[in-house]
Image (cartoon, rainbow, N blue to C red; front, side):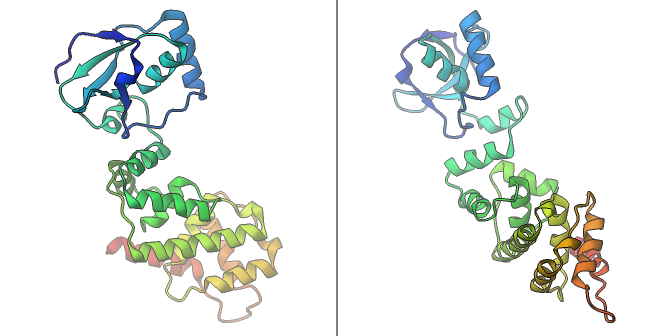
Amino acid sequence: MKHKTVEITKYYSKFKLSLENRDINLKKNKAKKLRESLKKHGWIPSFPMTCFRNGSDQLTILDGQHRFSIARELGMPVKYVIVDQEFDISEINNTQDTWRLKDYLSRWQKAGKDAYFEIEEFMSAHPNLTLSASISLLGGQYQGNTQLKNKYKEGNFSISSKSRGKAYQIANCFESIIEVNDDAKHNNLLKALYKCFYVDSFDSQRLIDQCKKNPAMIQPYSKTEDWLDLLQEIYNHGRKSNRIPLRFQAEEAMKQRQCK
């Protein structure tokens, strides 16, 4: 990739922000520090914007859009170079300033990827879920799955009808338990429920009803295994015989999934 000489201009309209880049937030602390730096030192020539001629009269900013936006706000000239090859800015920035999961969500929504819009819809319907948890549930994988996260970052995330249905069931159950006791809003409860929902005989409505009848039994725990023990106790509450070994069944279900 060949770079040309650093050029300077205040003709801001000749530039266009890349849809593939992160959304601009000039209220963040990092942007505030950048603003103070530009006021104090001006635009340092050794850190120009990287632009690509997109076939029109405008230049697409591939890197440096925050500096550009602040310089435009301050009425300062911008400094830039034009490269002869377009590149995926998320790949480049991934080796520099860490992209958050939310940044990738916005990046692939701009590219028109339906699954990424569905993730946002899912989170709107279940406000107590994090983005990471939503990705895992909709992707049909246990949380922390590296391969799934990489697919998400690369824009290859997809949602099957089976994983979609299961995700909504788990999320709805999670929300129902939280309504009973807000102390249950814990990521490891969600992990425990994920395991339970892969037990064929598991009755989620029974669990929800039991939680509503016995709210005092719900206590926060830091480990998934402890949550499984608690869910098993609540699930079997009132049964003197034929108690369901829910934790054992859930862990066996996970082992079977790993073997597939």
